[in-house]
View 1 (tube, rainbow, N blue to C red):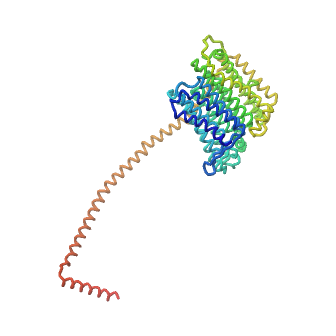
View 2 (cartoon, helix red, strand yellow):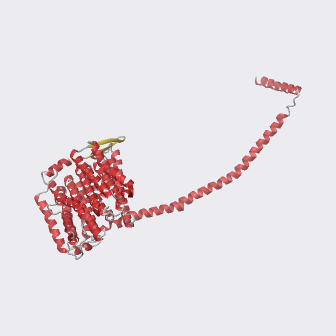
View 3 (cartoon, one colour):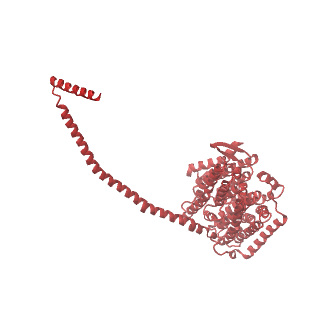
Length: 608
């Protein structure tokens, strides 16, 4: 079965690469090819989740490549593949961006393959490989309309912000190696000793919070809404932003072992769920409302990871993927037909066609936490674990869940208002994938109730978690209904909050003030120092060396020339002197020999 596991990420990766290489020649066939490959990948993921295969291959000494679909990775692999298939079917039905279909579909498949690699990774190096490809393709997908300067700026902001957090994974890998976790298996990271264990946890938390758009990194998701609707439906509901929450859920034992990591994670998630819920209430742009609600809903998953509620966090992830993908696709359909994302301009959108309105209502009520839809059950399950840990944590999560009903109802209030506008043309081909997503919002609910909850806990292999009491379910459902009734009676225009909530808490301005501007100022200072000090110093050293070389050349050349001339003259003189005895007369040579032997004899006598 290892071949199946290698094929699971390889199929979308190879298909996506082939479409990118084919370019415009494959534009006509790319949507159908992409949807078909995604459906096959979905089938492979379902088989892998059923059989639980493992695969390994040598990579570096002591660091093998290991993949596994078991426990937490099994349901998430199916979710990623299924949502990718449904989103690509919706893109094929007309929601895809105009032009460059091969590039768009290829990038979507590459992203899906990278996400499946991340999910199936059993070791940190493999996870890093998928994580990096996922980040690069998300940048390309958000900025798919590269002629739109705002879209490219948003893509760059998203990429740089998440990359800042991604540095934590490299810190975590280095710390885990230093701590003795040689294979870097995700399940063994908690076994390292301090301080390496704490450093590993800090790196993982930083990377996860950045990828999942949690505080203080939430602002990048606002700009990412510039991307096409299918991109938001895939990346920003079920895959990319969910990767951070998945990583925290997967490394829950490490967070608990540090003594501080679980607490920090839980409260960061709770604070994000509450504050970004208020940001969602303040929005007048539908996609911005959905984006802020994504940060808030992911906050519940992060809270679950810190509270040790792996089952509740997993169910929250699955249900949120279905509901938010549905809502993003419908928002994209309305944007295409009406040319606007502003809620006041979408008045009456749910009435024409009414089928789309009912589907949007299903997703919004699920997001609001209405019983018996899946997010209501999932929140109760994770909040039950939070209650056993800290009542204040439970109260914060419950308040955030109540806010979800407010911002969901605000969206519904606008789109169901009567409007005299003519009905835009419907897209019948969209009904099938959208209906499946809507059905998932209801079909996932039984997983929170025994005996299916017990089966899910057995699949996840994370132990038994506390189940919510009847009063907890009644309280959360009642608060959601009461908040929705109040929001409907108040009306959308009156659900406005003062600054800084409409501006996403001013997080992007704060990032520019605290990070971007100081870095740019430091860069300009370094450039000025390089130009005015280092460059001038180098030039001065060069000119000085040249001047010294010229002076040395003059002095040394004259001295050396004189010495050579003197030596030549001496050699000539010695040669002239050596020629004088050479007369060619035999008696003179005899006299010279006698004189020489006489001198040698004298020297010999004196030396002895």
